[in-house]
Image (cartoon, rainbow, N blue to C red; front, side, top):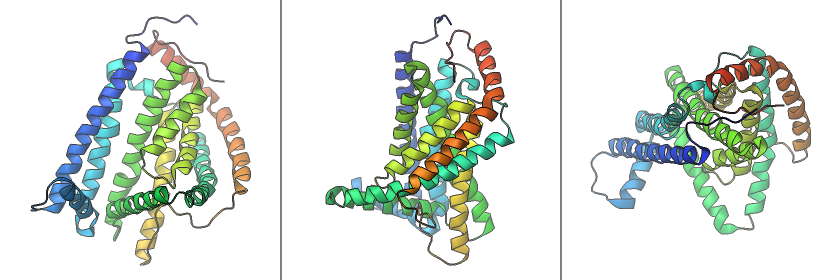
Length: 325
């Protein structure tokens, strides 16, 4: 296929992407500060002391609504707004990011199974990370502090004492994060890098590393890379962002449901902890299962992927497509 002139070259697109993401981060920080101040109330604290006090105030049960508002507002501006801005500036149509009606229930079911076994595969990597960090006490201490902070944040947003709270949390903690994160990481970053580098594997790996970094967890860094790789491959082989959004949402929903059930039972739920531990050698078994599931996904996605590719070819005639094998 002959490459035709694009509206912006890839270096310019990268500059635009970095610009809108930086702008989104700034807006997100304003949102966090606003709701942090609302949760803290009147205080004479300033600087870092005030920032820490606002953070702790958001973690208290009585400020759950502020914590949820801060979460949805900050992720909206950090992930969703930059993604939409980049797409509209550079390509004008959301189809470029994989928004298409061409997907089916079989793809969704396979994507769900892939995410389930990817979670099983990712589990042992948490234990591997913890064992490695024992020899690095400074980094290990930092990892524990970051994990405690993350668990406090999730629990503050998931103060689930009734079905009403659970339904609200389904949107705040499960659906919107899946939508916003998938749009930025798979729909924009992975998609952009795949077309620019012409190396899908490299694009998926880079995106997965960034996806893990944004979650600010040292213990779960490798585990989240595994989940990012699974989501990246799902998107690559389906060319449909809805499949990854729904798979990501189901993954979040199940974790939230376990937390809700634990709250109803009066038990202290532990965020990010599997109900049972898998040995390291299970990685090979889950890896083999994942390979088979991806083979099936590729097969059942072929027709829909071709339909999407044809629509992209018509919509973006000046954008060379990358053939997916």
